[in-house]
Image 1 (spheres, rainbow, N blue to C red):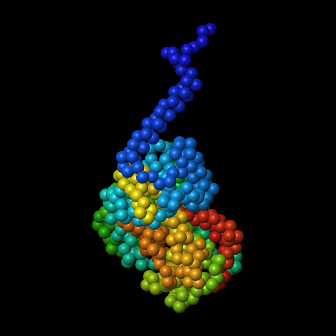
Image 2 (cartoon, rainbow, N blue to C red):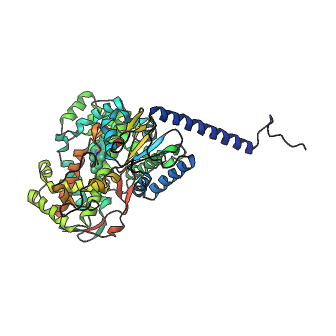
Length: 513
Ligand code: HEM
């Protein structure tokens, strides 16, 4: 039989198809890279140190980041990236993985300031972030920019004014329930598990007027789905360049569970007439975040998106911060005793604190500040360039060129642990890696070196709510327990970064009355 010529007009062999596809892909890659390089050249062409230039080093880094996320080593990986820094640019590195976009990684306060305020309009969540997060958070405050974001912010802001936050009944209800469920004095238990259940109860109560009751029903399907969706969302974000290939079955099913719980509340509220809604809003007791939203918009999708966004923002952040606080306090009995004595001096051993009491307790706020310094609840964050722009160069060096579509990943966790941004340790100032609320007595962080709540126009809208809730819970725990003992291997604790950074081993403790 005559040999088939390579080119013929019949059905192609599989090998020919593979060769054709690969050739096409390579030509396309070359085109994308050349086109992108031209854009960067015409915008200024100043680069940060590169982690790698070719597509294969890009793939290596993608793999490294995915593995670090899966094995809870993101912090170490991020710190190691700056080994590629240079004396001219020590705190910023870049990589181009897919050819048409660079990812910058920074731990520089000046860069954080630039993207969050100085050039706020140039950086945002961007269409890419919106696309990846849309199934979960829709068009909410978290996923949008410009006018759309501003509209969400205006919608949500009234719910965080002081006289709403200073109503502490909602915190007392869940805290007292939680304390009732703590095991007997001296018994070991994971206090983190209680914090996660308590804060989802507080937040659903605040949002919907009814809690998911996870303190009483730990196996709640809603809670499991919420955790799973967040885990997958973080994975999709880390694997952003190839996220479309990640299977999403559990992610979509989890979102459906969340919606099945929330939508009936929305439907019931939207069934109220304007008059009925107005009556509810006059009653302090039954008025909720959902009612507030419904009095501004009747669009169920807008309401669903904002509710899930605030639920995400409000629950794990506070639970994780409380967990880290107890992790540290259980290791430092002297700090625990000092905090307890401040609490006793203001509210005594049993009285419920008022909003003003909480704000008057300096050492309590130092303790929370110090926890958020070492363990900022949102450890990694991202912004996309919405236009061609720059990041400031290091100490008189030229500004770094950033073109529209590039991404800047900044880490409050890594930045806030940089020893060189702190005073030299002394008898007044403990080494920065040590938990020491006392340092806040005579020190405050230089601007933009401490950003657990972000800064600028997109600063956390729930900051006061969060600080009030966490202070309240701590006061009630310390009023009741004379000491808290750590019951795990304290040094073996590790930082587990999903969207929020939590203690990877839980927080096993025993509380003593
Ligand atoms: C320890 C507690 C908390 C910390 C450390 C924290 C931190 C943050 C951070 C870093 C951001 C910026 C996120 C971004 O760039 O996309 C943020 C945004 C936000 N936070 Fe918080 N948060 C906390 C608690 C809360 C609570 C309790 C609520 C509400 C109940 C809340 C509501 C929000 C909202 C709505 C935004 C979006 C603001 C915007 O984009 O304009 N947060 N938070």
